[in-house]
Amino acid sequence: MKKLLIVAAALAAIGAHAQSYPSKPISIVVPFTAGGPTDRVARDLAEAMRKPLGGVSIIIDNVAGAGSSIGSNKVAKAAPDGYTLLVNHIAMGTMPSLLRNMPFKVESDFEYVGMINDVPMTLIGRPTLPAQNYKDLSGWIAQNKGKINLGNAGIGSASHLCGLLFQNAVATDMTTVPYKGTAPAMTDLMGGQIDLMCDQTTNTTQQIEGKKVIAYAVTTSKPLTTPALKSLPTLQESGLKGFEVTIWHGIYAPKGTPADVLAKLNTALKAALKDPDFIKKQEALGAVVVTDKRVEPAEHKKFVAAEIAKWSPVIKAAGVYAD
Ligand code: ASP
Image (tube, rainbow, N blue to C red; front, side):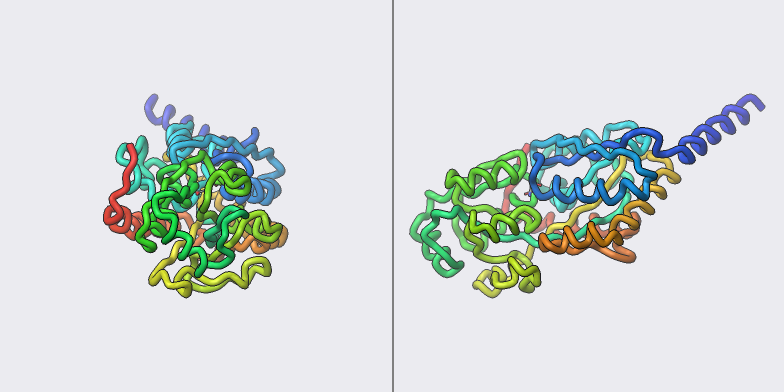
């Protein structure tokens, strides 16, 4: 009898928690530096999710480093109460293969709230590079073997994956310069400290429009429709057969977060993804907000598992790991 009462009290507490959720600010961990593409998506999403979550404050906590594994690990180990969430990207699908010592498990240490968007990448160069298009760039690469610096956001990041595939495709090793996010890498690229970088259009569109960097190509299989990016060729049509990388973002909570809280978060996510302001901001930066089934937690979980399976052999063949 005593046991039953304890169980009933515990269930009532969980129910009460879910009913009153959220009753204090929510923190979204972005595992990269502020001002970069993941940060941008998370900040815009936080603004769009605020209203459907009853106007609660949503704070962005940038916990950058080690290709997103430090910030992701913080959320994996956080209290499962819905007040600490993670926004991350394709790294959820590539970290398990790129990092030898993962401090957490992507598939079992998180509850999946849902998917946010798909984002193309662009190959960009410092403004002083003597190549104005991809054809000239490939000539410049051939002449400068051993001297080229390629920026990225650390082992396991999207820019790392894309840069890795690019080096393989052009059969040229480059010196990779890791940052804690592509925001500081972009500053150095614009300043001419590094030569090349792959990065999401959510970080590169404005710099391309402002001619602060030279844009060579997009990494998707089809050209883009965003006005600032639609004249860019794909890497495939530039001669890199089969080259295709599309970044995506999702939102996650620590394993064990109550189902009612997760349902509220998913409902708020769906509302945000239908918010015309959010859609407009994302589209202007080349991102495509996901709809329908892909937003569902179970569907997103299946998608991430498929991404892990897709990238693992590619990464193994490239032979790149980090501890
Ligand atoms: N674009 C970065 C990456 O390469 C991450 C970031 O700074 O948002 O993964």
